[in-house]
Length: 187
Image 1 (cartoon, rainbow, N blue to C red):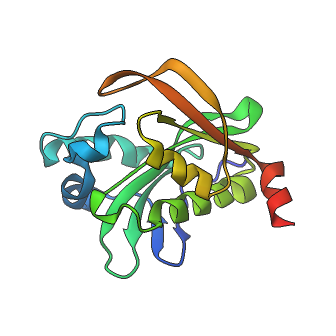
Image 2: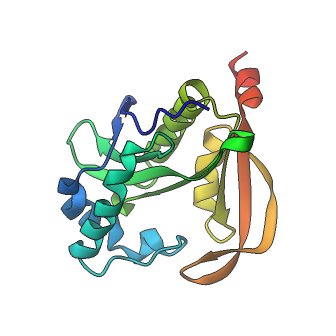
């Protein structure tokens, strides 16, 4: 595994980059304060922008670690930040990364999250040398699973009562892609 850390990635509509403290206001107002965004996540909506700043103050120094992968999603057209995509768990011993993501409700349904996820997966496979990329969602949040389907991840199974989010214990639906799966789809 190459410990390249969070590097800037560009897609047709997005710049995926490291967070900076100046992102706090937009991060808070665009998605971190919204219960509809966080209801299937492990963290509650932020009470105020100071909570968001505190989290950024924890994250930003971690960019010095080559095994820390956490991007803010910035719209190229407007420069507005709209979401977050990151590796939430990495296992170097098996070259595996578990992904997490969230995005401002105002941008749901526009294909931006699959665009970001595909770009990050390409980076993790091609640059970092990851072999397996996985993600899970609460069974009651099938839209998150559709994001995974759109990038070619395959549903592997449902782990009953194996997850915990702000609503409580939940069934987790797991999707994954191996590097060899992606090579097969490329022809």
